[in-house]
Image 1 (cartoon, rainbow, N blue to C red):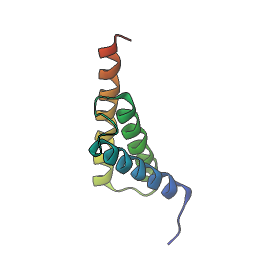
Image 2: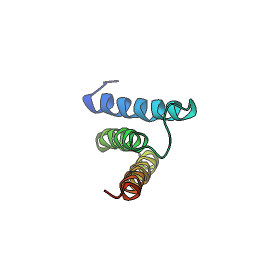
Image 3: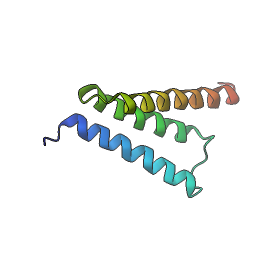
Length: 83
């Protein structure tokens, strides 16, 4: 098995999503925070990049909606702040 650059990108994305969730559960970050949504969006986006090269439909659906929901959270944050 070869480990390509896009596998590394996907692995970093998975790590970002997992670490973000751990931080949420430990109370170190709030789900309403901008950082939470950004970390989730970037992490899921990185996984999507890896899926371009090694496609899996189920994983694509999960990560696609993870990005959309995170973008919603980012938009909600800025609308709440009036920016």
